[in-house]
Image (cartoon, rainbow, N blue to C red; front, side):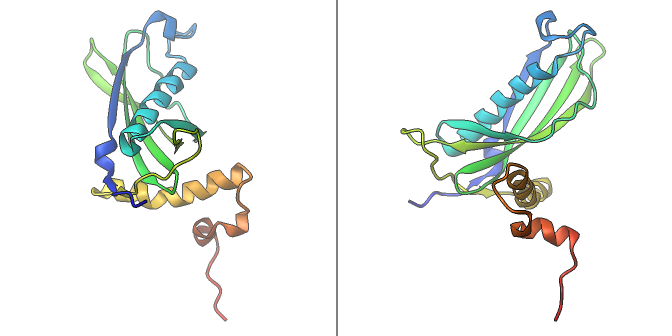
Length: 176
């Protein structure tokens, strides 16, 4: 089965949420778990848009909370498929907070998640390749293989010596 590659831009999902009292901790900041929940939904929607199939979360990379989002502020999440492998997709996400009263936006965090497409029997299925168009999309696409190798090593699914893309970053090529 041949799948037609799709443009990264075609997978973009933008999600907006209002931070309500039930979403916050005792400091009046959006709880990290609530934000991760919303990010997981946005990322899954981007993947389903890309592959036209149900998907499941396979991994979540490090999520660092740079700036807290306060009660009453708005959360903006942008998710896009940055690269597709045989059955998995890496999703790049950006999160901004917005103070609707003062009318300014601020970066909250950025993260990567990986999803796997499923067939009707719940088994992994092939996904279309990604075509990166912009310089930013190309940069994300090129780095995805190294990030994938790191995920596989950390998950015990790849030996460090087999991670050629990562090794190239740390070791000089040997000449004989």
